[in-house]
Length: 97
Image (cartoon, rainbow, N blue to C red; front, side, top):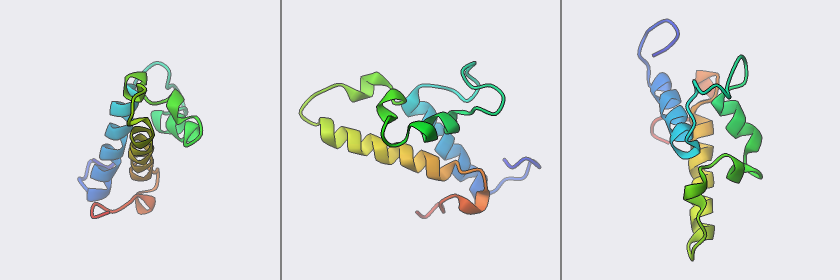
């Protein structure tokens, strides 16, 4: 939903982006860590890409033979979450993307 209560695909894209960030960071936008102007999206954006391992849930970063592939995949997922959750709807990626 948009701030005015209307449904739009851009609002759906935003929700999807925030959901990706929530799932892979295991944090909710309502966590006490995020207060005032500091948001889940801002936290992830500040860590992206160099310190993203500080944000992504540690269980997802377990070391094994697929570590490099897994980390690249997680980076792409978090980047998608950031693109989808941009503040301005016109800056968000399209559903088709």
